[in-house]
Amino acid sequence: MGSFDIFDTIEQLRKTDEAFCVATVLRTADATSAKAGAKAAITRDGRILGHLGGACVQRAVRASAQEALSSGAPRMIRVKPSDKVVKMADPDGVQTFKSGCPSGGTVDLLVEPYQHAPRLVIFGESLIAKALAAHGALSGFRVCVSESAEIEGDFQRFTQESIGQLGVEARDYVVVASQGRGDAAALKAALQTDALRVSMVASRQKADTLITKLIAQGLDPVRAGRLKSPAGLDIHAIDPHEIALSILAEIVLWRNSDKTTEASDDEKRA
Image (cartoon, rainbow, N blue to C red; front, side, top):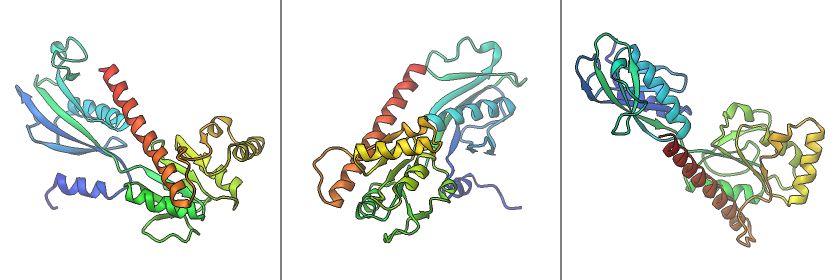
């Protein structure tokens, strides 16, 4: 069996679509099986790939990894004997976890989340869809386009039937730019994803009409309520590239506003 290399493991995880965390032992005090500099990767489902110490440390790391993945922000934690834990955070602000291990050691760790860029999922074959794919790729999004769209580029493809296989998450963005070609079906598929932000290139009146019909057909009104239409910021855009730019600008605004909100929530919890 070949020797384990944490950096090879991290590289392999980066090639998947799954987010994960990297935990690094920063400091130890008294007797611990963990050593400063030790690293491990923690997958979304809680697997620890690498050695960080005993069961007490592993439980704390798993819990912190889930929090880091949810917030997208790194966190420092300290695992120390139960009789030495007075509050959930030490005077230096580090979150503490109780350890029942007989060794009585203390371990400080840094838990860092690794998340791929958000997806930009685009329904439609319109000129706006093509322009948005190009702008989105330049802005660092993982762009996904309709299977039938004649769009040049190394984009992940999907159909309305296979959209579930993309694994769209709340942090991803979905835009319906079908513009008269299968609008209702595309909108229904878009709103059935888990993305919190769904927008449509259409007038408010047209979108409302489609939403009313879809709800009558059984669409969850809560899911329908996520729709923003017309898509994009009002920059008086005219041609497809300008409209695509306005849509992308709105998505960037959402993304950065969400990050600010998450950071503020983290500060309040601290």
